[in-house]
Amino acid sequence: MNHEFSIESRQFNLWYGDFQALFDIDIGIRQGIITALIGPSGCGKTTLLRSVNRINERLGYVRTEGLMKVMQKNILDSDVELAQLRKQVGMVFQRPNPLPLSIRDNILFAHKLHTQSHEKLSRQDENNLVENVLRQVLLWDSVKERLHQKAIDLSLEEQQKLCIARLLPVKPSILLMDEPCSALDPKGTEAVEELLWELRGQYTILIVTHNMAQARRVSDESIFMLMGKLMEHAPTDQMFVTPACKETADYIEGRYG
Amino acid sequence: MNESTNQTVSHSIDDCRNLDWYIDKFIQVFVFIGGISAIVFIIGIFFFITNEGIGFLFKSGFQLTPHAVSLLEEAKIPDDTLAALDELAGENFETATELEAALEDVLMPEELSQFQALIVKSAVYEPFSISEFFTSYRWKPTSEWNPTYGILALIAGTASVTGFAMLIAIPFSLGAAIYIGEFATGRQREVLKVLVELLAAVPSVVWGFIGLSIMNPLIIRLFNVPIGLNVLNAGLILGLMAAPIMTTIAEDALKAVPDRYREAAEAMGATRWQLVFKVVLPASKNGLVAAVLLGVGRGFGETMAVLMATGHTINLPTSVFDSVRALTATIAAELGETAVGSDHYQALFTLGILLFLVTFLINLTADLVVRGIRKG
Image (cartoon, rainbow over all chains, first blue to last red; front, side):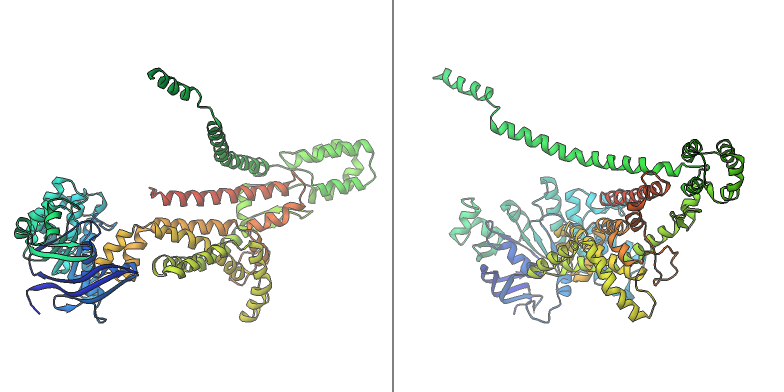
């Protein structure tokens, strides 16, 4: 196995009940870069994304087959602790979903989940941690005066940045993003894309997007999916200029989708 | 061609009062009456209870008791004196001296002296005061010599039974709601929900029957106490009665927590318990408090089961094995045997006002809590 891959799958199949959503997916997501998942609605890109931290299983009627490796460990093994997996693989959702807590408590939520009571941080250390991650997501200056206010009261853009920020204290290696900008206005989208570039290199980022221009702007590599199958995986520049498959070319040019 | 189109259009505007229009109007009026009648009934009930009971609260002074009048009537006195006496019986006097003076006017001196001792001893009421109503534990409305109306023991009875019931119902119902809402899935969840709703539909007299015929001997045997109709029995019964309703409301509150909170917490690696305690419960706490309050209101207002299971004994309870009597049960048991308009009758309606106010306050608080309005 290649160690430069953060996420790697072999013959990965997934069923929702009787419906097969993913067919024999083989991917290798390289460490530290941004990979975009593109494809028409219902092609399985979100399903694939949600398989990486196994959040799909909440539904209760999901069945998988094959191999899905995250940091060289097959996460479908029975000895995998979901809490540990999800500590390593953070996820950002389509709609910003801060918890109904204060901004500060949102940031510390995951951190508190994953620390035992004896290694609790002092209040000063917590404050430093909060400041540190909020600076990383370029949010510190706008919220530093209101850390104890409800996170729900922030603007959508700020909420989405907060949702990214709250993943960072537990030091994940992978960030999954499911159309993180689809609920934001163009200005918010720009701000979040800027943030993605800031985070690039420190984290392996896998992002689902419907927006071709966004995929082109933010990603190093792109994966095109269609009808639950992986059609093409190539560097973004190459895919958008000289796509290998006819379907990719058609989709990128907007002939369907 | 153009003209005919215009005609069709104007025709359809004129002719809008067809059957659908009338049905629509009828339904509107019907629904409006239905809605407004709730308010009318509430106000009507409030006025009725207040009107019947309020006189008692502002009563003061002295009156001949019916018992004294009947004693006087048994003596051989002339008919016109009798009529005057009847009139006197309905009157209210500021002081005992005034009452005696009035009696002297009516009765012959020898008759008066004959009954003087009796009149002084028993024919007058002790002055009524509202503080006595709330602080005396003597509830003896049917006493011929000296009826007293102290509801402290009744309040203590209701409070102890309701309190004990909540000790049982709160953990049970919240646990059940969390299990049904957050852990049970699919078929199991549906079956549980139906069963809980079925439990809520058990008539209270059936619960009372269980308390009387099953719990009573069980408690006597288990705890070796002389009587099993007590706070423990009624509290258990009432707790089991209130729990299904509280479970249903609490589960609704949990269901109202958006799923994206759960998804967010799970994606951060929260276990099911962490999810429930750190996200779902804090997010639904208003609804849960409301569920508890409505359960308290239910327990407070419950009548039949507590009448049957408390033992119906006027008592300030000192342990859970003491029999007590509840406010509601007192009204239910005694109202049928009082003369309309008598002091006893009015006192029972005063209890009704009290119950109405307390349940109204509890429900109002629950409503405000649900809306998230914090006081102060």
